[in-house]
Length: 422
Image: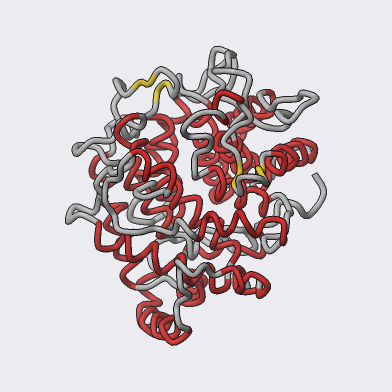
């Protein structure tokens, strides 16, 4: 099952991230086992034969045991969700309306999508008997109310917000089969598909910043933007919507074409100004590309991707503290966005690389959680762009919770976007 099937990846454990001894993994499994009933209680929903079947019940306990979760990680998830539930606005959103950025636009739509994904990840769906079903319902209502009738775009934010909101609602629809979500989701997906670039150069297949008013930020697609669109489209496909195979094939070509063999990383974009700057790439681009390529059918242990995996593993999470700008970009220190995508990618890779990453991720996140269940915003993105502050740490907390839900968010053998007809 899942990541452990990828035995070829075991040689990729970096010297900077020593593999966890097998003895520690067995001890963790034994500690989780007595809590099986408690960990699986409350969802009230069965998602058998779906990629979401590990989010409750015995499958959840099994996933925690197999993939390195623990009672401590589950306590952190529960406390983080409780914090997010407490600070949710009456209209179902997270963040302030005034949190508006010139490039990112209205960020509360994206923050609400991230928070909703965190609740769905732990099995809290609208209409269920779970503890936070009402929180999820209010979040869905907010996102639906913010969808533009003409374009299908969610809110007045950028491609990030729309992609994340589409991703969240697609998961919710797949888990609930709530008929009211079908038509809004179809329009949201059509909007994503319409914004995929179709050119005759390396930009083809990617997504740049796009907005509700049909403009784009510039002509250069970005790997990080593209990753959210791929996840939105794949989640919609898993929910039963028709997504053309060609959209996935173009995205795969764009991502593979973003690999910079000379520098040993995936480019943030092909923009010559970016490539000639002090920050020629942004670190999350590499794990985001690796994760999405694995969804798109590329083998995780492909020898051509070895340098990319080394790039990620050398930057495994360290102490939870606010970094300098250079450390944030060059070494991914305190870069929760990089940690989130690194967790997704390394989980797919499996083997010793995952065991090493998982240990480092837990060592960084678990001691850093505040008493109220939140995590302090230490990332440049959190305070400067997402609008996190001490009164609303929703972006930061949602990313941390999503990382700690990794063990059961997806039933990995079924999450193979490259297989089957489109």
